[in-house]
Length: 146
Image (cartoon, rainbow, N blue to C red; front, side):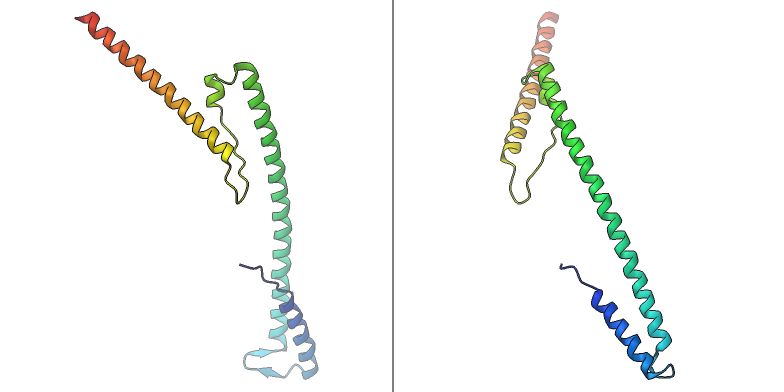
């Protein structure tokens, strides 16, 4: 949805107040009189000013969040490099290390998907090996018991 520009409403109200002042304070149209339209004008301006200030604050908050994202990305790089240097690429620590995925809007992140699939396969292989070891251990115990 396109963002609506409300300046023309304020300009309209300003023009109406100027026009109405020429007609005199006694002129009215239904419930509308000079005092009512001036009240409407000041309330509208107050709301517009409040929204403007909140949008400025929201912009500042977004900028702070974006700076935090950059710091987290930097931390992610350092953490991955540190674990890689300490344990190697085939270690469980490196395989289980959380990844910060940065997807590009409108474009699938093929490399990230491939890494994720490989990690899932490695984790599944580790789990399968653990299960196979447990089954072999149980079979050993059963054969020793007989």
